[in-house]
Length: 186
Image 1 (cartoon, rainbow, N blue to C red):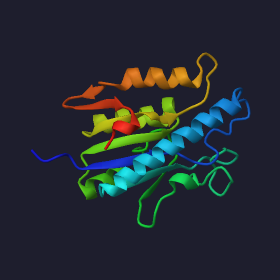
Image 2: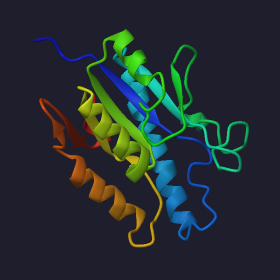
Image 3: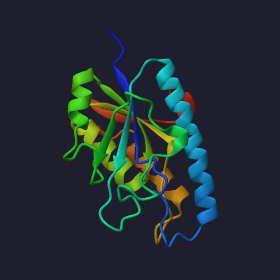
């Protein structure tokens, strides 16, 4: 049986993604974000070397939002910026499939499996991974390739660990999420 055709989905790795005024541990969060962006750059390089499509998701926030189009926080981070021809799908909700062209893009290229990485763990990454499985895609979530901020009750490291444990093995019919370190994703 041939291997499933795979695409790398890079979600909301935008300049202002973690520019939240109430952010308490800014130095630690910024360092962790930069480290994650480096790991995503490695995933992108491996995807390109394997001729796998790299698809970018960019959140378009409303007026006054830190990711409002045209503001300094809206552009994708330069370390992982798209190359000419890479699809950039714009979204307005946590679900990268909701009212976007993502499903059509995947269908047009015959994608059966997604490798998912990006921001924000408990919102866009979780929602998109679950929705992908329910739509019939297998998902590999990069365990160290997604990021968020502290909540009122959990540190960002705890949120990431919780979602890695929660999503690993999440399934819908024959399709599931597998979580593994980015270095093991070929």
